[in-house]
Length: 489
Image (cartoon, rainbow, N blue to C red):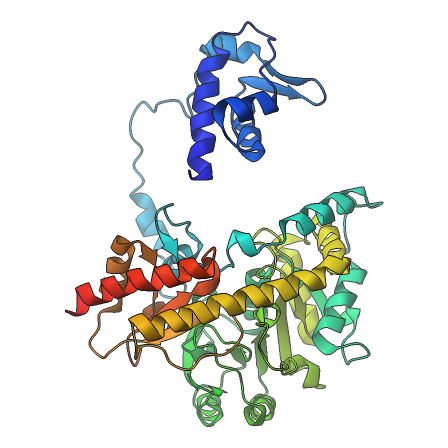
């Protein structure tokens, strides 16, 4: 049974049960409720929390859970969420108010693909769409232990430095540039995850209305941030070796852009790795144009167990402050550990710092302390090895299933990242195919949102890390084949 429905059902049952109790009566213990209703400890805890939030029960640590006076007053029923209005409100005026700057900002339309990736699919649908690894790949015990230790650290609830904890910034600097490398804690700014870092970088380095060069196809979140900030994303095509540097130079000349966003390692969605020859070219071209390169290094901790040695981040080979580097712990741990880092030098770093202070002051210290505890734990390296092995197995399952079920759709792929980019035959309606796949019980992503301009061909993105096992990846591809046959005849 889906956990969310289990919590709701148990909460409904307990609401009825408290009706029979006098005020102050103690409810059965958690163990008794687990045995009676055949649910997990987490389900009991969450159901009790629901009733406590409604004011029907109160939890007293060490004593138990007790019926409140509010439960007696309401007869055990959940309180209404809102009082009825005397008349329905007229919200149509907002259409006029919000359309005033529609020509310069496009936050609503740009966010649509993000909702598609973040939404949780129904329990009977296999997820080959999500932007985060499945919960089974998260280091829950490590995270829980790190969070518990962090809460006991002296000063854990004090206000942190605006830039972030020095120890955590030093760790990111070593992780990006290597021990004894060119980066130090003073080059790093702790952010609330990678998306926040990307938002800060684009808003800091480009003025509203300015062009921003982006890979094509590219991560839709970058396009969404750019458009919401009033920027103009300009596509630069990608091939199997990463961004086309000949076209990058031409794009800088044509647009006079001052920012280029890229993902040199396991690019989303193509999986391309920027080739050695092009790495130096990207830096040279940007330096000549007087422009910044925003390097989104989102997938470095998602390297597979069978991958060769990884290339260094562009930031590690950049003495001139051309590269603004984004890094995050989120994808390798949990969507809730929203800890990332922005690395920059010179006046650019001060601009980034000012933007973050205006937006959110700082990242909560307990979360930073927990992140520091996590990466300092001997289990952190073991988790990354386990994650790499699991991603390898899921990738192999996805590749084998595609070759068997849908030969011809799979292009080149690399041992890293969490997704595959499928080239559909010309004329295929990818949106119709994705809808048919959902009816068949598998969630996949149409390729259109990954293109800042008109796409050259139809595609699908398949996220094998979102499934809870290699077997489920295989089953998901089988369901995709049924949808493909239905829509292509």
